[in-house]
Length: 559
Image (cartoon, rainbow, N blue to C red; front, top):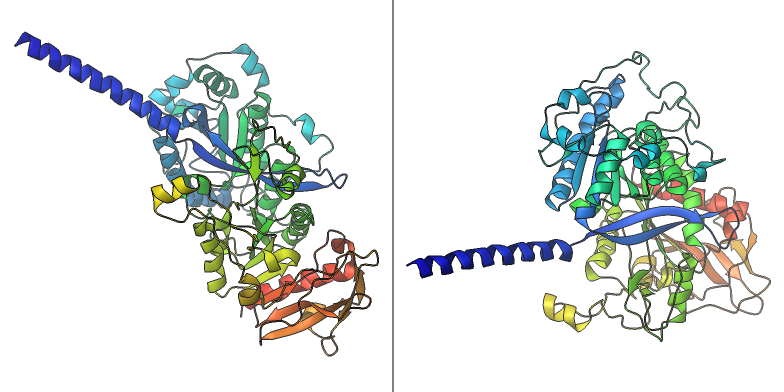
């Protein structure tokens, strides 16, 4: 009897031990897949910036989310209303993150005494570190030297003139759940010491307001950066204090876009809640601006520089822009790495080694395609990409919705990789998921969507391509302010076009070859142009062409 009891106890201990190991393995086996967005200096154009995505795998046990100043009430009624609106969506993100093992830090400044007896408050008070305390500094970083602040907040940023600054808050808004496993603190010294002692390296900031507390508190973006944390802003889980009657005189939410751009440029990368929820990112209900989804993946025409530059001008016109970017994902090394792939990877300023030991990239990927779900216009500037079927389906779903689409330059061969492209894992993936071991392509996109007939291009001429207006089209609204010009592009072969619904607006010519269609409307809501060279954006007629095209397509959604 005693022997049987002993065996039972030993078996129970073994099962517990084995289960603990399995649980730990499960945690290790499921890192957080984080897609960061940042703006870094261009290697090709001095003083310019390019927008990039990186994929990072974070250990949840080494990750924390800090919730900044989500008070129950703000002195500005508009700010209070927006906090109340975003809080339920934020709480969903926190619940998912907490379930994955991420530490949640509640930082409602100036009302910590409300939580003095809460276990989460007591947990934050256990740690001290004088070196960390010295780094809990929200002043500007060296990287911000000479940077221009994007909004005028000298009036404290409230658009409601009946509101006057005063202390209105007493605690964090109750729609954000606080558990005993969380921590509560408004001290960067405390939070930083806790992170150091518990091994937290990755920090996500959510809450309000980006241009004040989120960036400048002792636990804010700058302070976390100083502490050496891998810090990011969740850009759809935040707000700012800005009055649209102040410079730069844009919509409140355009002001937020400009602030996010500043942070991505000078402070740290940003992410969206989609990395946790798998849903489209959050948007305030009063944000009525048109939404443009830039979907870009190419390395030949500096699209990751020129499109963000153009998008900034759209922001100043109160048009919101999101980016779904092609990125070089690291994969197993191959000595025969494609030269095109290596060139693209180098364009992101990242080293490439083909010694058989170091990882090399694969270019067949797009991030953040969830932005297509609520886009009013999709802009496609992609060159020869194959995608995971579900990602290509997101593009097909957008096209099927009948919403406007603009194809630029290499869009004519956007989803034609000219060869079969294995999924990562190849046959293993196919066996495991009962699906194809190849990535999906859409070579018919040119004909079926754009109405084109891309057959390569003529030679690279020093004289460029002469652009002319089709007779009879001079008064078309898209051509307002457009006169014939010379483009540095080499001329694409597109004759004859393959849609009976095409209206050609521009043609291009080279010496001793037939004129080619250069820009056309297919039906009513699809426009394509083979223009798009990086120097085209310096030409006044091309810029007018682009502004007119965006205006034309976005107005279709308002009819």
